[in-house]
Image (cartoon, rainbow, N blue to C red):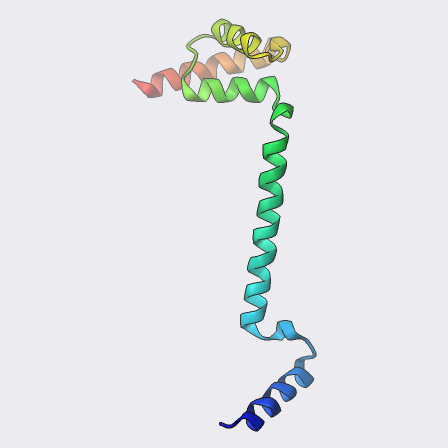
Length: 108
């Protein structure tokens, strides 16, 4: 093909579809760029909002990791890290205790 044929094909493709995104390669690159940008924004948001991590979420992470073997030790560790253990009461305390026991059983 010569250059004139390429120009004619490009012009006819644009006339048919009316959009540069009708080219699959361009659409794929655009989607990838948008995905990358959204991922970067989410990563920055999570990195900047580490302080909004709640006591219960931190307690669950600690229990999941096996860092504490009782709810009382877990509450003490939360307090030492600057979290309020006030959320760990009642049903949450009971379920957290069961979760710690399950993690301990699975570890052995």
